[in-house]
Image (cartoon, rainbow, N blue to C red; front, top):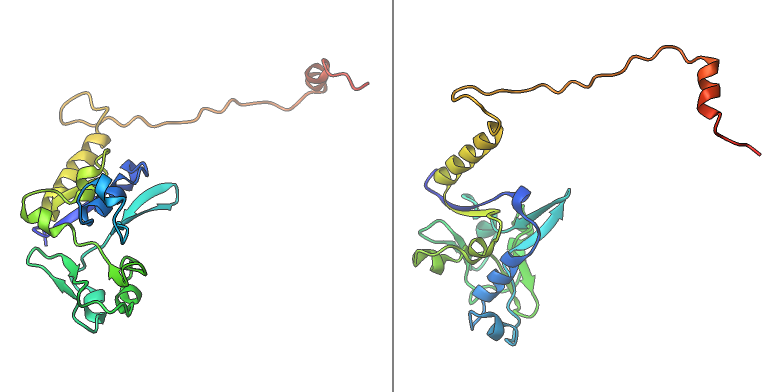
Length: 205
């Protein structure tokens, strides 16, 4: 499992610029460049979508499940798994029945009327075979998306989180945690003269 190729998403770093969506659409266009893609028919569409959830921007993409329900639900065998472990869809076999759309627990595959078939993320398998990053990961300006073997990514994330945890460390091997205690000023009973002084500047007429 640790060797599985995957895309790790950190919503705390995503600023919702949607550069990943644009890069995905261009990568799946015929021209493979922005100026050519905007005039193509059918219009190139991204295979992922940035969704806003509880103040976070989350790039939602195919999870390429080990036990992919979309693959099981497809009646024509249009969805299969590559040797890299990516779940991909062959548009030439897709009949647009939407069985995969209903089976996916993440709401990922999307039917596109302009294409008359379902579109889904393929993790840019051809780019990966060339030793390149998926288009969405390469385009992300904040590093909110990471690609690689699951074990290596998790180790990198652990180190990053540990670094954040001990960012105030002064002595190697020791972590200082300063408790924050709110000091409340003790107040005695309110006296009539205090009220008079408080409201003295006020004029009620």
